[in-house]
Image 1: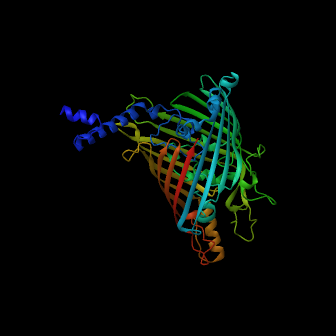
Image 2: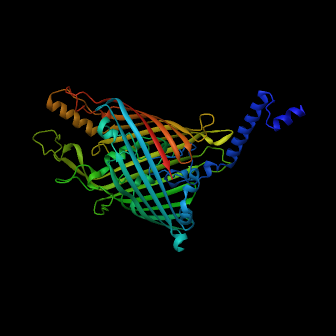
Image 3: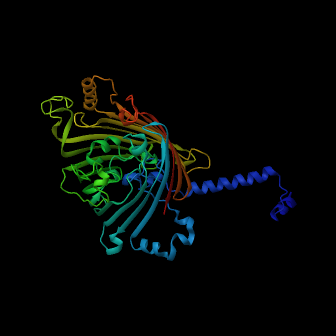
Length: 502
């Protein structure tokens, strides 16, 4: 058999097919073993979504959520064209870094909703960071800026008519500033202070597993986006704020943010009803509105290799808004708002509030590749029923990274969210039906089920087919296009998202 091997070495394929296959399998296995050996264990990664240690094995490669900490880039694939002239490397050596992320997607409502149809939309995201310790020898200081160019048409706004927005990038077309802040860290980075224009959805109420999903609610919970003035300081509207964070060790963190309570200002006679049009460029910099305070404590566990529990994070938080809010059913004399003899203005309450709790847990890691496996998350939130459209929210989901053979970087998942219409709002609907003497829909809740698969085509390049089913759009409101006043029918949505990051 020596002569056979010599002929094979000279390129003459006389070896049996099974031996060729064995050699190929061995090469593939060796390559896979090398990949696994060189990967940094995810549990030691300090780039989890929201800026905390990563405890979700199913955190995706790319995401549209503002809380996502993306690290992959297409630059390596471009070779010398990835850094023409070496300017990017030069800037990085001197403490200046930037990234460009483009998300393009197309979604279609194929059944239900207020009408059928499809949209195309996109977002270009420019991130800029300056490490002032490298630039000016200013220890622990840095500057961050984030700008968006948003274009296209939103499916939820124009076709589904729901309040759990189908896509996390959906917004009115604009070029706008999002965040712009200065941060100072002290005591070996255990305490930090940010000041500038901030968004609450970058650090608060963040599920690492939830960043996989396309629907906006799996980033910032829908209940808070609906009940806070102008939607609160979340995409695409940030607001002047101060955030303090204390991290005594990598397992525990406390943070509090004080935000201007209305990033667009209230809707008044003569201005636009849409907050995105009232703050078209993200440069309103409002500071005279009643404040919004958000506070959160998070505990991460299972971070060490020798721990006998899979890694996870438990989070407890709450918010308080110091503004004035109206009752949604009764006026100051406790008469129904629909009563013709009443004022038609809901009684005033001072302040509004909410609480939330969350667990994000890795439940399984593959024995031969601990960076692949499954994670789950559950979040619940509640707010007072008398002054809010929604009073209860829950979502849950599971993500799995590397489920398919040979696709170790791909992530797939399924998630469900439910927003419950408040008791006072349901009471208002009942009063309206009784006054009119005609049957009509009474709002109850809206829910969404999402199935998604993110395929990593190359570092920083992903393709993500997505399906969503929306139950009771708008909470079960009447379809404005239906002459009989029936509810808007459940909507079936299909879409495809492409992301490239440089």
